[in-house]
Length: 324
Image 1: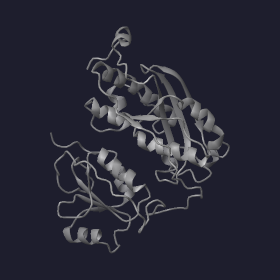
Image 2 (image 1 turned 90 degrees about the horizontal axis):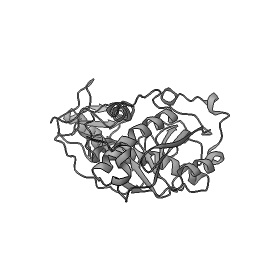
Image 3 (image 1 turned 135 degrees about the vertical axis):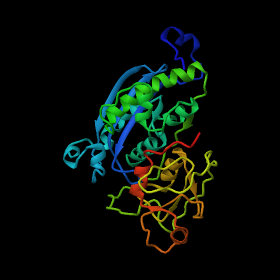
Image 4 (image 1 turned 180 degrees about the horizontal axis):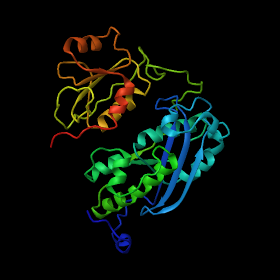
């Protein structure tokens, strides 16, 4: 794949492409709707993806920092950090008039939008671009859609994974050649509208195991029709082996991660979200395997493997490609 060089960029650049980008990464206390941002970074890029400047801040989440073993930010470190309303204006200035670019952009946008809603404001973002979606549009030969795989493909060295500033830098460096490859082929960028969110929780989050505020038993959630999985079902999950694209995954009971987000991550990994358990189901994910539900009962009768949410989210990080 040939990438446009600086001499041909101006002449060949698609006129419909955005005039500027804000490459964003946020680290958070978790993945649910009541979780908070603990750090944020923005790399501003021009129309051709060249870095203009960058910005980074810690944010006091006013609660437990969550998975410190991932982002490394302890309560002591965050205690003196500014609250989100105190950095909201500067953050907005970095985003204003630009397309928000992130790896799994839906998640970053939702976390940012909810923080602005809590601050009784709106982020000045109209469109977002997910680099996972762009990699798929370009048919990049990646083993999976993790940031480290995208970085490795373009020879970008990742120094501190899950550090917002370094993750944003890595993504900015990987986005530029992706953008140029798309421009060379006149690929339509996978831009999506950013709508302000009003769903957020102001109450301090309580310790939760196997439950979350946004998906309780009896709560209403609209059904969402998803496209069929493009990969054949390779069969059941085997303990101590990775998941494989095409596997059918069912969920039962409450989850700490927002259910829709968890299902989105499942689909993005190339897995099939099953609404029921059958003999064809590869895996059941539940935080309460001893509960008496139709799904857990069927899983027991069929011998379907069962894992909890924490184990499943780890498995999602390394999903094996489908057989070619």
